[in-house]
View 1 (cartoon, rainbow, N blue to C red):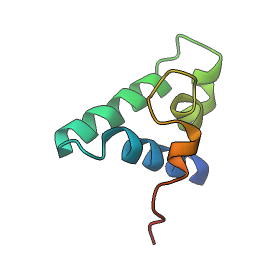
View 2: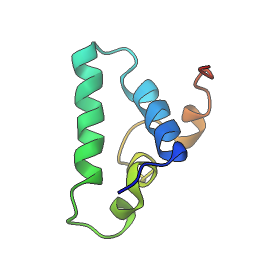
View 3: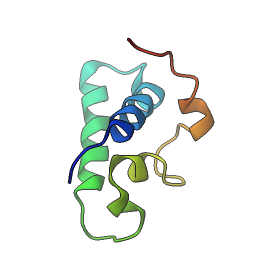
Length: 75
């Protein structure tokens, strides 16, 4: 699976929203959880949409799409 710029952006925003107050180990654990869901292969609906699909799936992770938009822009 190729990772798009959109995937990277949504993954970064999700990690920031989900684990910004956690230790580095906690942030890595959240990232691995997302990665494992992307690579799961058991479900063929939103799982097959890559990182964006996993991060934005209803009830999958706590940050809503609106909350993800509040992340500061990194240059």
